[in-house]
Length: 401
Image (tube, rainbow, N blue to C red; front, side, top):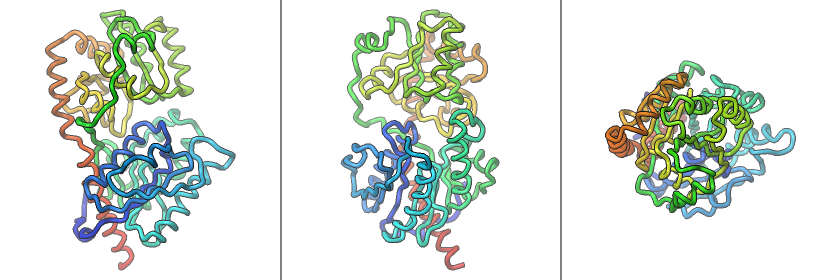
């Protein structure tokens, strides 16, 4: 799905603009993508000159991070989490208007929108946009009416106007092509990565973590996912009633959303309210403790652009079961048990096997370690730099054609 040689734009350090206006403290997997890609770009090509465009709400730790190379942060006077009437239009205006002007003054080679939005027109810089998924089209209830309408206004046109589009999985690329009409020849499939050797937080001890979260000594199923309808967390709640071991507990960490109230009601209706925990935002130490404490990770999503929690669990030696749809089989390979996400009995069968079959657990743990070796952020950065150079070649071709 990649065409054109990047060699014509190679030979000198690139001046890259990264649109990080979306980046907040709790930006989920897209936030991880932004931080890791920025770091990996500088690790892969240390002479790359990066300008990072942010909102006024960018976390201070991002600006103060000791990046492996120089990063110039440009804070735009807009908000993205909340704000007065018209805040969304102002944020889009900054991304479509202010960023191109600043890019021209700084003579940037390329501007990359890391979360669905890229400039529609630039004087000099090529444009690249990453479309992580089209969940907001196929499952509009997951974002709310206003957010869905906003995404419909900015993402499709950003993709169609960009010189290159990055998809994070082959499944996402096919969806972008068929749903938005973007030619596959314009799409670069560049998966996310993991850092198995990265220094991680010291996990909270098991006993202390069980006390904090109100957990008994029974087995724990962990699901690290935003509390949104397309994540299909209700299926996991229903599955608790079908497991052979009726004391199993389910932990669903993450920032509360309106959908969480529906999940709590469901847990009460099916009689498992005392076996489901909904902790909000967790510290790094608490999350590491949960990965160590849990018996397995389950991800029953109906659609994912990639599915980073699978690899995050695998690199911590936690066995995984996940949906057999969208991008998840592509990411999991042979290192996870797959199930039909719309069939609680199938989910229960997979979880029962993971929690009782010692040989299977050992096999999946070993395969998970091997699977993680196929996904690195350095490889993501290398392919992204190639995409930038393809975009530059395309932009120059349009200028001289």
